Length: 441
Image (tube, rainbow, N blue to C red):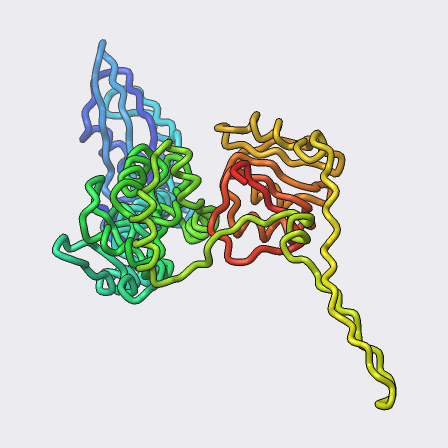
């Protein structure tokens, strides 16, 4: 019998016979014609009894008066002794009454076959079993953070709006679209966001917006644009930030979120972009007073001549110091009016009017050099980035947009002489080195 635990090699041989023979005839010929051929140590009968040789398997068929088939013999010997047994098979020349021929075609290493099976099976186990059951360190950390974020999320008002834990205590909040957006912002430590829960803005959001500085942060799709338009009509928001085109807030990384919030634009510029009428002035003033974060009223800087005319210097003639015995004449103070500013020639003072008229409604900006020539024209949304990348050749900017604090700070940092925009935004401080004009001034 074959001992599968000790088999090392399998001998495969082909047999052909000039006549009709069957399996017992072939087995008998193998034992009979090799008996005594290799000595007592390699006698096939003794080797089979001790398990050193496995069961001889013969597959043979007859056709046209001739027989052919295959023989396989398992062996637990080493390479040399197995090769001797294989060569002994080829000495058989008769099977029963028929002339026969046996030819060994290959010897298979059973252990190599097992190794190939082990490798293939190990690949299968590694891919299909371990991936489903083993969590990496990052996955474990993320799972714990997710559970903490779910515990931190709160609900506001009768509408049970999903919100971060700091919405009520913070002076500034973010208004996002859904619960998944709030969870993603919590993931990166932003805890002052609240979700509107769809395009129908609930009254709770309107009440919050009346008391806080609000940034609407929506997806970069059509739905996000519709939510912004509704918020502009029913709530008092201050800034608008958008996710990149075709991307949702819930899918953004920390770097993308920070970039989008830094590029937020004032609500006045959004109102112009969507052609939406602003709130009535009286209602806007009442709402502004309720804001917890007070901002200084915007103003438009006048040019040097106008400022000199508004504040006239006073020149005082000092009294002469004389001895007490001499009468002191009375010298009156004389107020000297400032010299009237010499008006600039009309073409030179109003040279920018043509650029302002051409840019009206385009939401574009023209970056000018010291000779009042256009260096390049960019979109208003890219103006801050373009100014940061300038290398000193820019003297001023004319653009169809709102002059914001951020643009003004960048202009002062880059040494620009003037900014000419469509409107003034909420300016808390204005550097004296930059002249700011608007087409409304």
